[in-house]
Length: 363
Image (tube, rainbow, N blue to C red; front, side, top):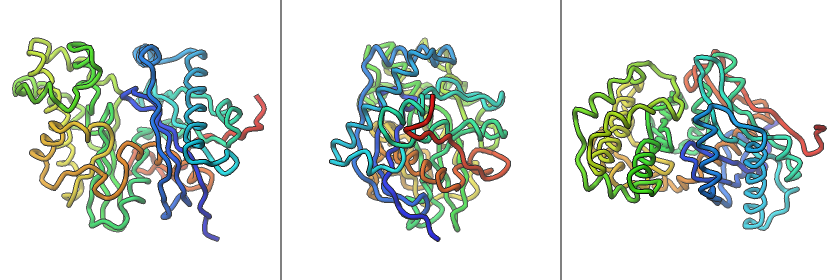
């Protein structure tokens, strides 16, 4: 019997640390995907600073984990209120939590967030800890959204690529018959954001204005692109801190030229990734905050051989995609379907993932 469609909520707190994305999705975990209400609840600066400290340390205490979980519970209540739905109409919550440490070579990945507490607070079954089983089996544990990207691009000419630019950037290549390849391309917004915050006090380069006023330093860019990561064959993944020394390479540049160089770095990394794909793509669809940076989108258009457009071009909200993906994967977990594959995370065999918590689960 075919799996029936249900309503699920996906929650995502990404590497940009800007807040919680909450998305309602109707899906059967396979071909049927229908988006619903979506919202973002920003983190206040003090909480964002606490998250940044945890990431720098590679671990978090129980107080931060509980505070994060309670904020996610509020996000669930908010999206239910906006959708005018009771909690009992929701079959599952897909709860990504927040990554504070990711080192698949050490078979370790840490996403903080208490799934059992979230289930009790919301009254809805929760799937969390999506990455650990993949990493324990030798996979990269990321990216996980490709299986959802395949579902939402099912009607498009192939090959097609979905490029998600959050703090780190990752791509999904989808070929004929649904073949997949996915991996982190390199930095996304993180280095640009960090540079802007350090030099202007604003945590983003709004509309790419800083970079637009500068010029990329080709010598510094060449040094950045010499990182051994770019020569590795996919699948592969990154921790947000992997390029923490990159800013030192542009430290002597002006504020504007530094921003331009780091923006060029993100685009050049995607270009390098495109050269590792099994076949050229017919279209690049961009999700995540990076698609809002006109300078970065222009840089991608100049470096990639196929048209580049925000994913809104096919009717999806680029801010909601990752949260929707975790709703989709939660349903797949319930139905015993895989969420990661040898071609997406390097795991030996297709694997489901995530831990299921019910509201009445004993502590």
